[in-house]
Length: 263
Ligand SMILES: NC(=O)c1ccc[n+]([C@@H]2O[C@H](COP(=O)([O-])OP(=O)(O)OC[C@H]3O[C@@H](n4cnc5c(N)ncnc54)[C@H](OP(=O)(O)O)[C@@H]3O)[C@@H](O)[C@H]2O)c1
Image (cartoon, rainbow, N blue to C red):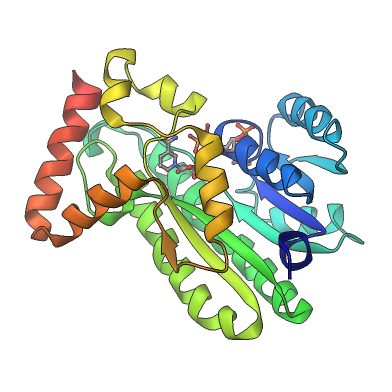
């Protein structure tokens, strides 16, 4: 079965308004899948919708805060009547700073957008996909999930939650025809990355371009998993890091992260 047959005709991208979310949406459109774009900023979604319609695809937009308790009910109403074969949870909230310097409000928002959001998505969409008998769920995590780290600890913790949640879904839904994949991205040149990373430090993180992450991630869906690291360099780093004693890994990554963000 080709990509559209397996994961189309419609896909939903949660956190689609810019960066990697826009890249997933573009790559889906390029592969012939119609897309529902979801995020809070309606104007950004509309701009992207115009671009994707230009590729001949049908596009719907939904301005929605995914941490609202009724977010998935609102989404279900917005996609009523559409045959959705793939859902991507890409939205995130990230604040860089030492644990004691980040407000509780920001910590809890990170938890809500990055962990509660994917959990609510999975709770709503796993039964739909299983009833359909085929389809996919893709959760965007991060290489920062593989160990604790200074400066990004809460973000990294939520991304670790995403990996374990995705692994569980991969095991339980795979035999029911639903492909689940967690994409643990490394540094990626998105507006968010550019916003928080000083220009002089960006190249040192060997960032990928969002289009390559999306292309590799969608290619890996149904073939690899439960967790996939896009980018050869990232996979090399992951290979080395995963062989290190854990305390070394935490120290090493913390040092790199401090160098990047503290100057
Ligand atoms: N960039 C990197 O270096 C990097 C590295 C590793 C992993 N990742 C992962 O890749 C994904 C995308 O990263 P990115 O850099 O492209 O992030 P981003 O620029 O911050 O984009 C995140 C998207 O999520 C949406 N969003 C945030 N909060 C939302 C909410 N409450 N409700 C609905 N939508 C919300 C944003 O749109 P609105 O503001 O319009 O709502 C935006 O479209 C994330 O899951 C991130 O953890 C990124």
